[in-house]
Image 1 (cartoon, rainbow, N blue to C red):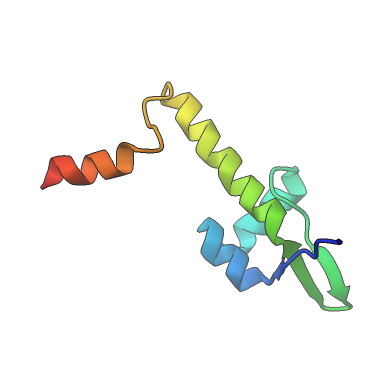
Image 2: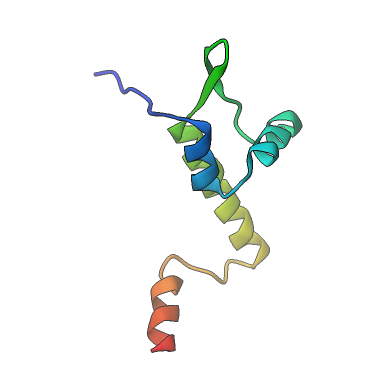
Length: 83
């Protein structure tokens, strides 16, 4: 069975990553952000799996920088501590 990729348009990519249009294209030029797939002469989209991987890598980089102090369950723990 063949798996089909979902394509994300720019606004969805901006929403998911929190990056602006210019920041996305600067990242593409720098090789730090996934390149889009051309759909037509003036239309592009990104593979959902590549955007998800980009987000997961950013989270992993943050966790590494923080010394791994933030675990998967820490969000719930923070909520409980605040109550």
